Image 1: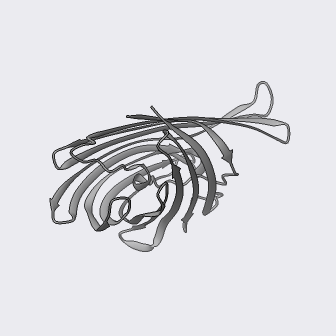
Image 2: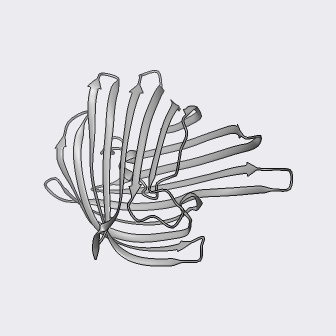
Image 3: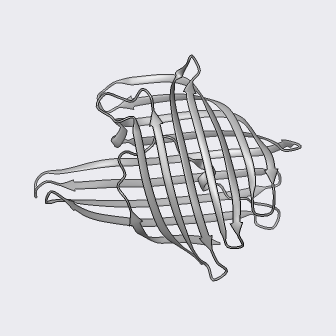
Length: 253
């Protein structure tokens, strides 16, 4: 099955983009019947601020495959913002990433997962960020249309900033996610991430995301999302808070 989100209906102001990728938001439950998932999102936005045209183009692809007790997840995102001050003065803000994750069932409700990611996020002064890590994922509650998962892993991260500064750190990546069925065709997804540096737990990044999903049997659904992130030690001149609201239509083929 392939899903295509064809257009963003409502796009409230985004102050800054978070550097944490919420894989729980992208993850889809696969089993012996549904062994694969494909998702492609295409969206665009045009605004005019102080007579400066701003164009944003976003392409997102999500491929998932289940083999026996293991899952493979590949997520790619390309996001460019073009700001035109005049005909000869154009700036481009890039926020793109590629993420690969593998998880396998160990015993009872416990899973092992490992992952790697490469990313650029000019909104947060990050020219290049790459990481790899691994840890455990535990299923606390799982029902037909809902569930609660927690996960904790150790990862190594390298960041090159646009200001020519570089950092390397070992971090913890901890999360809790839940899917709450509200009605037959409505569900709420909540995810909270906490990523501190191993040697300094007061140097951390958090992310909270919520998504209200209205889906129907006629292959059309609507998603309303709210995202909030906080970095208590961001790069110089970069805000430590980020918020965004997003509404989108999803059509399944």
